[in-house]
Amino acid sequence: MDVQVHRADASHLDLIASLFDAYRGFYGQPSNLTQSRAFIAERIARDESVIFLARDADGEALGFVQLFPTFSSIDAHRTWLLGDLFTAPAARGRGVGRQLMNTARAFAVLSGAKGMVLETATDNHGAQHLYESLGYVRDTGYYTYCLDLKQG
Figure 1 (cartoon, rainbow, N blue to C red):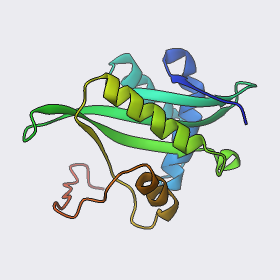
Figure 2 (cartoon, rainbow, N blue to C red):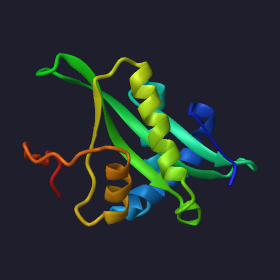
Figure 3 (spheres, rainbow, N blue to C red):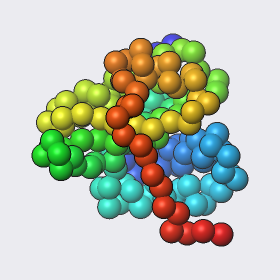
Figure 4 (tube, one colour):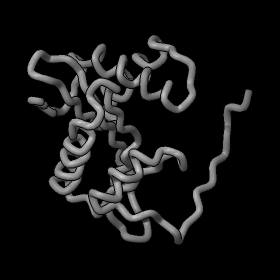
């Protein structure tokens, strides 16, 4: 499969929004293409994230990865939060996710970042296997806490 990965911009909004909506569905959220499109459009317009889009030779969207900038006070360096990785079901098992992850890593290195961090569901074993095969190490030294500010 000929896969091309490039940094997305506003001209790719509809392709990414559809994938992002499917990604949210994977994590149990109801489909809401309008909300998904608005979220991605705002990230792009405000330059709040970096999105890489994978497409086949015909231009069909195969997957995306979205990175958010963050900083480590302890290390006093920039890090990237890999917030989202999604591969369309028809493209799974073909190396698209690995190619997106490698593109994200290369971008982080070029940006001078100290590292990348990510979270995934405890039952997302396929993604865990991919991450570990790429050298990511599960953190056993810290707990993640969440505070829901928009309950209900």
